[in-house]
Structure formats: structure tokens, C-alpha cells
Image (cartoon, rainbow, N blue to C red; front, side, top):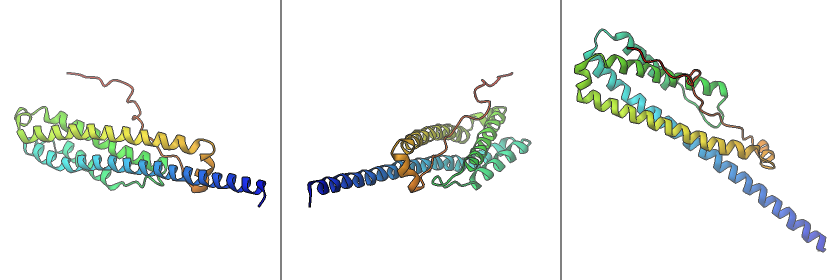
Length: 193
């Protein structure tokens, strides 16, 4: 075999090695996004699991606040009925999922506000413990969402870089959506007494 043939085969082998290495790296990043998504869903599930207990405790104290309790239950039901496959989610599906989760957050805020009107409830140990668990869960959700956005950013940047963009297009790898702030979140809430 000629020297040119050996050089050609060596360059071809390096190129093939690079393509396989780049593809494997992209797959690893994509799997990281999926794993972080599972963490987000686990945090949301934890919140959904705590809600029925919180509702039952508040129900005992605030019998006439049935509309607020109903809103919380309906928001939880809607949020838990929507599932997303992070490997092929559309921006519209992602937005629908986030709208449902934001509905739970909003309904829980109203429920906690109602609970503040009942001094006996505010002193109830079970309520205080559940409220603390929900606050901790909201923090977990925020951390999980941030971690998801971080790995999504890394993956999205990787599949847009040359020559990874060519490999990603052949492999069918597409950008992942990000969690974004709700519309109007940039405005500070008004506190009125």
C-alpha cells in the first residue's frame, strides 16, 4: 500500500472516530437533559402528592372556602394529567405543561392566603409541617428547573456548533425547550392590607 493510501486511511479513521465520539457526546448530553427532566417531574409529583393532605387540613377549618379548595384540586388534577416526553416535546406541549404547573402554584398561593385568615389553622402542627414541606418542594422545583435549563443550554449549544450540527441533524437531535418566567413575572406583586 502506498504512503498516500496509508495517510488517507489514517485520516478517514480519525474522521470516523471523531464522528462517533461527537455523536456519543451528544447522546450523553441528551440523556442528561432527560434525567434532569425526570427530576423536575419528580419535584412536581412531590408537590401534587402533598396537596390532598393540605386541602384536607384546610377543609376542616375553612368549610366555607370550598371554591378555593376546588380550584386547588382542579389545578392539581390538570397538572398531573399532562405528561411530556422530553425527547420529542414541542414548544406548544411544553407551554401547556408549564401553564398547568403555574396554575397549581397560583391555586396554592390562594389556598395559603385563605389559611392565613384562620388563626387556629395557622397554629395547627400538621398544617405548619405541610406548609414547610410545600415551601421546600417549591424550592426543589426551582432548583430542578434551573438544572434542566442548564443541561438544555449545554445540549442546545452543542448541537448548534459546527460540525456537531451536521451530526445532530443526521441523528435527528433537536433543541430542548427551556423553562421561562411567566408573562408578567417581571412586575413585583402588589401587597395590600
